[in-house]
Length: 207
Image 1: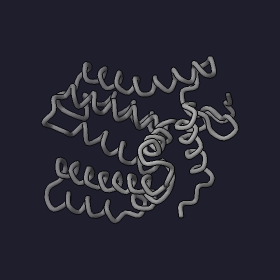
Image 2: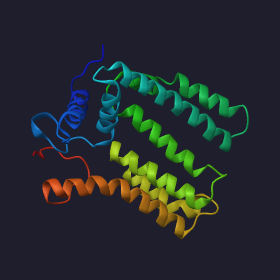
Image 3: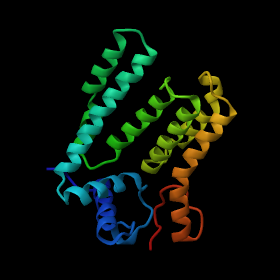
Image 4: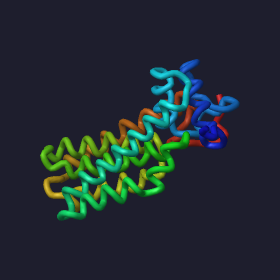
């Protein structure tokens, strides 16, 4: 049985209210205590499969496996053999990539989008503009799951011309625009609810 207490209970309540009433509120009407990414993930699964927790855990196991595969594919682009296979196997056996799959917490979804965003930068068969847009879009999703990586995201975008060949000012602007779109949806929603800027999660905001 999955313990739905603490943080897990808050995520569950947001998802439940989204499905049942279409409102993003948690316990006692808290409107912004949690970022919306993971509750939206839970709500989508609930809409398709109902309220059972087994489909959520199955989806998280799939995300965990895909994260290991993405790490392997990223290592293929950066390291000589046999190190990519070692990276993939280490990821598959790493406790902190396994344990979150069995919990109603955001870590599994967060890890997937973090690794996917880095993979997008190194997808060398894509033109640099598409890679920048993909990184920005995935980073925007990452921010909607948890706001902590925003300094890393902005620093990476600013340094793209120095980090990777083929990236210049245009790619930086594309990545910034794609990231801002994801973050802007949350900031805009909060402005409509609270009538002032709430850029991330905020304790004590109720409706």
